[in-house]
Image 1 (cartoon, rainbow, N blue to C red):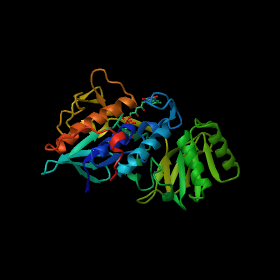
Image 2: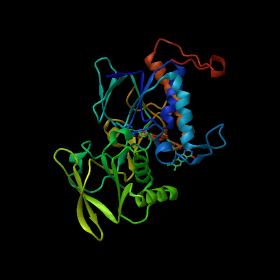
Image 3: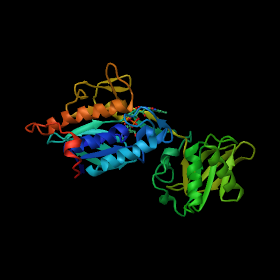
Image 4: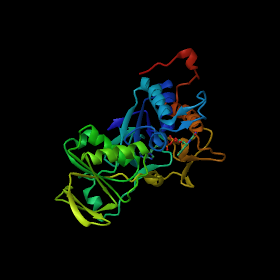
Length: 336
Ligand SMILES: Cc1cc2nc3c(=O)[nH]c(=O)nc-3n(C[C@H](O)[C@H](O)[C@H](O)COP(=O)(O)OP(=O)(O)OC[C@H]3O[C@@H](n4cnc5c(N)ncnc54)[C@H](O)[C@@H]3O)c2cc1C
């Protein structure tokens, strides 16, 4: 059981900044995110795009903003459960909440701060009837740790940057023993230089490039041993492999949080704007995931909401302590 003061669901920019504001109040945070890396939409959708409306930064790349937020949060030693989705919430006898992930990891905290943005990013799965039987038995939709594939045969499917970049990485770093990249079309949607690199690796025989083809079947005893490929011209044939990694992108959905008894409006959580609390005492919602009159889905609004919500959370955790607002210019940053 992971115990903390504030359990933040969602490690997007809003969840990350909340660590800092909680730290100033001497509250410890642990974050859960279904993605393998922190940063939410900034890391997953547009890491290389410049943002122009972060106060004090005339321009900053979304990926750089995430790096800075991680650096700013570091003195407060946050914990992370990454690559796991928060699915259920229960009340313990002591009044704390217990949040369990889809992998069974349990977390206990008196305060839950939902910073879930657009929701869980769920993988787009190829329509293969038995694919779920092989999930975590050779089928993975996200590459969390490339070392997991060391010395293994991998079939990657997809035509975007993720499929191209991982095919290149696993090949160039000599991690996988074999890499095949399967794509429905002959052209790719990814960056031109990545496409060129894949073509070069294919020409030198390091990547097996199979275009105008789809993976239509998976076989193996208890784990992936082969996939069936349907080629537009050559028909169907089997390829031996240890892993099948379809990288078709992720789609957001509010997901399991929608069943937690929270008041939901237009796929977002209704909050009281005095402290961004939800209808369940002890649960707050900040950032893109909440809704109220006049709501703007902007990063700077989420930073404000988290700051206010944490003052209220402090008062719930320490009903007898008076919190006096202290400027960081006066007190500095006292890490844990
Ligand atoms: C292309 C693009 C450009 C944008 N440009 C700007 C801009 O210029 N300026 C600006 O202010 N905003 C911009 N935005 C919007 C901005 O990215 C969002 O407002 C911001 O990301 C919201 O942050 P967040 O932390 O609330 O949510 P998110 O960034 O969505 O992060 C939420 C995280 O919660 C996780 N999560 C959700 N549910 C669960 C669960 N049950 N278990 C585990 N994890 C969960 C998700 O995986 C995700 O990582 C842009 C958005 C896009 C798509």
